[in-house]
Length: 317
Image (cartoon, rainbow, N blue to C red; front, side, top):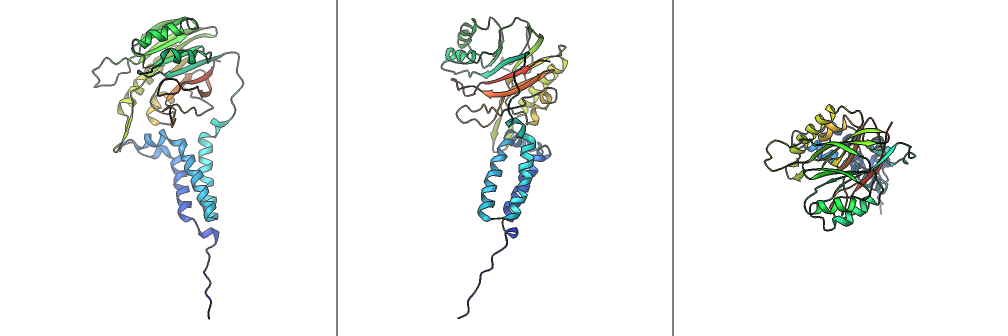
């Protein structure tokens, strides 16, 4: 009886689909700016979750090992290199605290937070110098003012955003970042000067419009317009040192925030995924600075909000 022998493909010939997916993933990481925003703002949608492509690489690696595919393993070096270039630095240890560091906390406290007093105590427990809050509504606003008064005697509120400080503040005013077409009383921008021992700083607190993900893609036109107005305000700021804190409803990789990220420094270390609090997928709560360095950003324990608070040290030159 004649026997048959089944040919086994060499490892270099197996896993070509996995290898192709690895190359595509590397392309999306390295050339995400080439993905157009003209249809459904797909570019911004990709950039909102760009770090998660690292999880795709892990899955492809597992499949390549199962298939014992040499070509797939080699191709996976491309997305690994691209992801490391973009995000590897965020994993490095934080720099040692400096003598001129300000600790700042940013938090969207949620307009239906059931425990504003507990939230205020939790934020003060991080011992920051500045606290920026969004979605401040009565009567919760009074609760925050009373709970924070002892440690943060200076504060300013405009509309639904506020700033609390250990140091004196002056010149508080509304910053108009309201997109066209909104007829409601929409006040979500604040600018004030903080008089620190290291010099004056212009502090901006902002809450940009929400974005929505649907079958047609990402709805972010109002957010993008508001970011542009805020970017113009920062560009016109006469004080050299600026700190921006806020719920910007976008990640620092999202091109919709280019009017801000092109003018300001972002966190050098840390991912600090802040939203949604129950299963954080992206950091949309941001701290940026001009003429200052933003160190490692981290999340604080959950409060009664659907956002996690974020804290960071800002090093002043």
